[in-house]
Image (tube, rainbow, N blue to C red; front, top):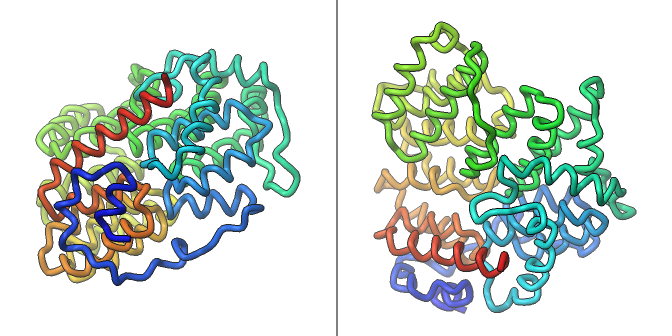
Length: 393
């Protein structure tokens, strides 16, 4: 098989002319090389998905593990349809995904998010109707959406478990299911930590229609709104708007004096993208305010981008390290792509990703960093729209 044939396999024949600098002679990493036991439990599958993205084989096994939870299966199906490139060889899975989406169609899904903010009440009613069912024997027990919907504010252990599951699912590239746990907690109990989780996942995956309106004016709410505004602007590389948001919101004393970790990291990203003076002390400060960098995707991404900017010779090492923890992310690739001395090593990594993870749209976006990327992005967006529309029809 060639890279051109891989492009055909993922219905991306139009991008074949951009594959010339790739190299076939590249080895998979340990996660890509690992063969998955068909009996693998949920914990194993989620850890592999974290690195490999929405691998159709892993996704199919994960759907099996949620056999008694149709709403959860529907949310997984939405993420796979929206987040993986399914080809002719995945026809059986594609047909299954269309069938699995039925509960979401009844709830009222949309082409932009699985559960819009105004359909969460319907989601809660649906999971309550299906009830709380255990995972299959041998699977790690995970709280169901139905059990989370039944929690009370005094059940701190249950709330902590639900938020932890939401984080794990988001890291496994399953934002719709992750968001659903946070949406249920926020709608039922109005927990600030659930709203924080909602915002973080919604920002990481650009699922903005899942996030409820934020109109409160207290100090914590203003910090939260500033963080949201900064990240939306920075995702568009609009540093002028981001700086204006920060300047305007800093008129509120809580924002001006804030040392909230999320806001500090967003400020660091603004400085990075705005070409402000930075040094390795900035990385030390990131690690001091966010000691859980290994599980906080956004903080880890900014730290990785900062290291690349300060020492371009580390670009390939930093990118590979990020991939090993979080999978592909075009923003990390883009930061590395600014440095021509790293091009050869980075293209070898792109080659690996496309050879062994061609179902991952972010791997193709990595290639787009090093060529005229507009046609690739247009092709990917068209594929995603067509695939999701067909599944939801």
